[in-house]
Length: 363
Ligand SMILES: O=C(O)CCC(=O)C(=O)O
Ligand SMILES: [Fe+2]
Image (cartoon, rainbow, N blue to C red; front, side, top):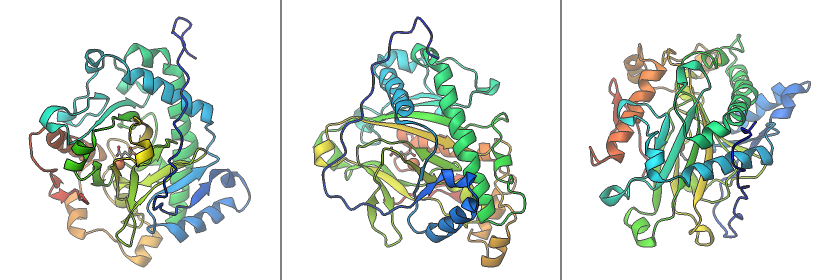
């Protein structure tokens, strides 16, 4: 509930979808309501097996969050980013040490080509992450908490159980048990805003807003936002636009899940480009949830009959290198390296992340 003294939030209305005829990726939707119906889990597992590793992203529908709830989160995000920079900088995140909690400013000056977005990451609502937040977050803390918990409990965990089933792991809680909410681990909800750049500035960086990459968590959930720009690298080597649909969450399989699944579930390669002409002057607000394994989870593939049958698709030397590396160490290393590029310590994104294991960039 908003606090009684909080000023009312200005309602958020998403901008219209683009009318341009873009090359859209064709993505499947998993209807989560099937999970509570007889035979539904089996049907979804077959659907997963039919599309996995083909198109990258997929959608989930009937996820239990309404457009009103989602637009409330955007309204909070919009009010947050409208705060004076000095105020936001009080909550700056310590990305140099691999900690992404709090505010990340937009790059400016000669580094402005590297990113044009601001982020605010709100970690799990556990004592470990108790920290200062701007008043606008405090005013809506309970509402943000409920939203985050719904994603964790009602969307993430059922999907992890489904993936354990797909991997034919006897214990269907095997993946879910690596994502216990109350255990240490940096999972977070992100508010994000990209600011439009002049055409010449965009052209100077090939119209790329975020270089082709894979994320470094387990699953990423991208909520409806209509400004086109997100693209997926399709198996035929073509970058295609990913259409955001009002009643669907876009889901991204990510590096930690690729590792845990012995490479069976491949990370989605994606990037963000300058939006099409009819949306080019819009700010692009984003609402994203990054699910992460618990901090102490070892970066080691789970035993799965499927992986035994088809063989691990991971490079053995990297699997050995990551033995003994925890999910937290790995994620911190990625964040810290990203920081070094974004803040100009290095001129190119670094590939060697931890223990000699590289991060690929795709453009
Ligand atoms: O803004 C988007 O649509 C995607 C953002 C993204 O890829 C990321 O933050 O990792
Ligand atoms: Fe990403």
